[in-house]
Image 1 (cartoon, rainbow, N blue to C red):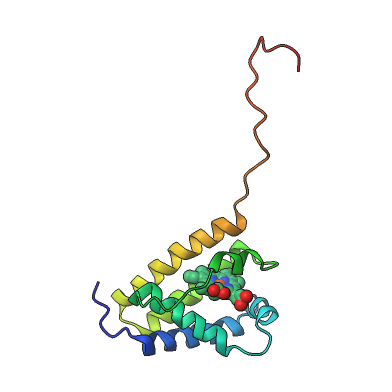
Image 2 (tube, rainbow, N blue to C red):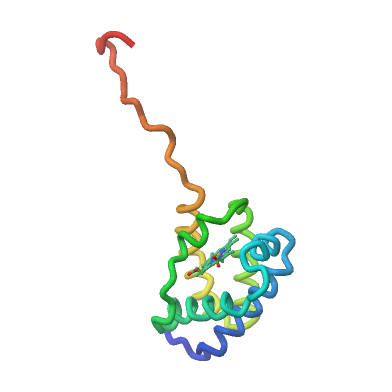
Amino acid sequence: MDHAGVDRQSIDKLVREFYARVRNDERLGPIFDREISSDWKPHLEKMTDFWCSVILKSGDYHGRPVPAHTKLQGVTEADFEIWQALFATTAAELFAPDTAAVFVARAERIAKSLRLAMFFRLGPPDVGQRHPGDGAL
Ligand code: HEM
């Protein structure tokens, strides 16, 4: 895809606008405020690096998203729905529809793997099938 109009500056704008909305959200705001109590600047820089790496293949981001999320307390699947809706609205306001769709598709794929890491639990181990004639038990 041709990323016309997408550069670090426009990605930075998306990141700032998106996290301003996140901070104002009654569910997401407190979750972020607990983790990022005072200085948002490093988080915003990191997220701009992240999205530049994802969309522009800039290689700027070297973090590990899964442990950053599995350690969070009290996040639910419903919170991800809010995150994804806010992200989609913000991207649609700042980019042309085709470009916004690329951001949203990438966000959804990453959200899916984060959700799997955070919420998917295997049930108790299967003790094995019992067959007639197996004897006691
Ligand atoms: C309800 C959904 C989400 C919540 C509540 C959430 C919350 C957070 C918080 C609090 C941090 C900061 C952790 C820290 O600084 O130690 C963080 C970091 C981060 N988040 Fe999320 N997040 C959510 C969804 C997503 C999604 C869908 C993506 C990607 C599309 C994402 C990408 C990242 C990245 C790249 C970092 C930086 C990780 C690092 O390298 O330290 N997050 N998130």
